[in-house]
Image (cartoon, rainbow, N blue to C red; front, side):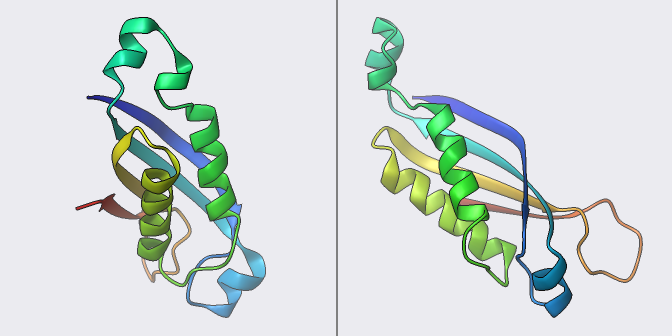
Length: 119
């Protein structure tokens, strides 16, 4: 087993509970950590026996840019499930989503959720 991490992938989308979030959209920052079973791919230096992280990025982008979710927790779970189901070598996915412009009365850097699949 080894780990692939994609850090601070940034997308513009319309997730959130409030109408303003749907109408205006906002940035979402995504980190993904994949537990990968691909020892043979490492030993033989073969991309076919591991995970193409370019394809992983495209899948994350497809989901984040797709249908609106009210909860970023649900968005994170959808990403984690899709990566585990869509990439045979991925044994577990951990997805962290940061929402810098969360509609919170107060000053904060961002709201963040952290979801793993399977648990």
